[in-house]
Length: 467
Image (tube, rainbow, N blue to C red; front, side, top):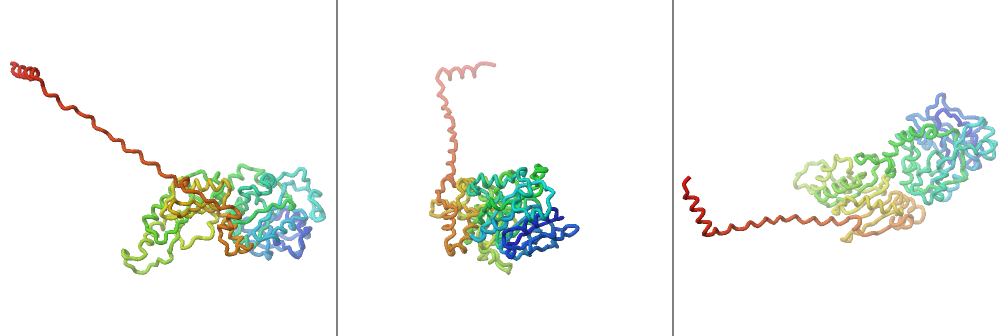
């Protein structure tokens, strides 16, 4: 276990390290890396600390995300334990967090914490204490929302988005998983743990709360000091990077860094006119928080001299030139195993354009029971499907490690999340029959009646009468 502690200034670090020195987890299986994020003066290790403790200096960049990434790169452990420099862990904390990772390799264990005012306590008192309540007044501690959420969701079993509680560290995960999702994003200055945990969720991990891994946080977090400003500061980062936060994406005309849905269309051997209609329909739906991926043999196209009109790749080149500068359309040779970090992926025939309501209704359907895949059976025997990214990620993680190697991913997802089949009429509603054109029947003009004999005589007398 490598405990990575980003620190700037090091206030409270002596208590953090004293608590880690008293852990029940074996010394020879744990290292502690204090990542000095530009402290002035530089951090020096206190007397009471774990046996295998070292300082790692940040050379490039700044901030918590950058510091954690720097520490993980220098770590030797198979498991990364993320801990803040102002947190004091109970004696069993590391042991409780680590035991889950003996079970399987795709878990993230989450520790508990409470907020306390920093008492006049020494590192030696913390080191000697058998329980946290011997040195901290836990009766006056401010509880974290993490524990309340875990209790309300039956230990996260009923949580729709369990990554929400993996914030305000402490948490532990396999180092391979940390690197597989790209580590923390140095561009995220606020809410970096939430954004990182969201990407972990899209990768397919299982979040496990460990109630015995207790800790106290020294002092109240910034949200308690100025909640309104803290919420505003984090909103841009989460809005752009966590599409599931629909409450942060209410501006329909906006474009976001990570789309809500990736629409994948295989355009191999498909005419440009068909693809044009498909892309237009995809981008003009009620749900516009999307990106379109056109899968085809784009790498076959070169810039050698050619006769344009007789080019065997004429249609493919036409499509490439048509969509090359549209930021919402991507051209790739092969779709990725999952669309992460986008939470959903749609796949369907290019010659069956999406109805304006198709994506919205498909997502609404799978969100009711959190199904992994919704397969819509089309009238011609083909199908279209909506895939949940976290379910795909879980299937990919399970396949090589639990005897599922070589299994069809749909079979794995059916076991973990469920695969549902439905007919197409709800998702491609038949267009209403056009109203008949109103037919205007011209009024019948009666033919003029033949003038009578008396009438003719009157007209003749009138004409002969002298003026």
